[in-house]
Length: 178
Image (cartoon, rainbow, N blue to C red; front, side, top):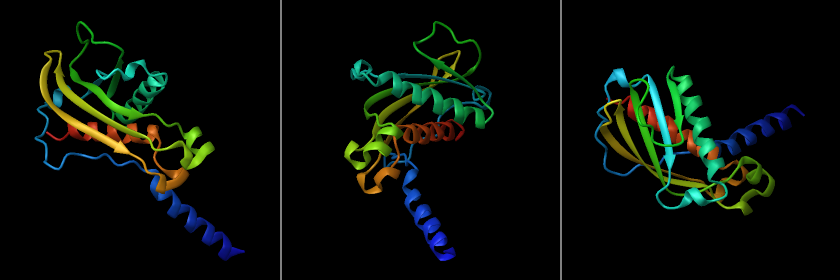
């Protein structure tokens, strides 16, 4: 019985290795973002789509994933986070404004993945982000972010929530990479 329990735990751990999402980056290394330390205490985030994805029925669920993930990542790093639904006329305090333009995505919830397994298909995100130092709106740089899951990972593949969280973690690392 003890061996069976140990085998079960080992197999479970091996299967969960696929749970993490990996952010794909272009092959060429990007220059560090020009963000002074004084502008890193508050992160402003605007998620939009110039490709018409904002008309999709799951767009608001997708944006909620960004709001939740960035709030969690920023809080863990001791930062303030402000989610924006539209471009503000002015910014209340100094910080870094990140505008994410979603080129393409496929929203996949954990419930859909666990309920229907690999038949639900793969989640993915392809987005471009521009970083600005505010309140001056001085452009600090841009980045491309992409993630995807694969059916080979089964029900443990990274759903949209894990992919968005991986991107927001990478964004914070990019902001801090001065």
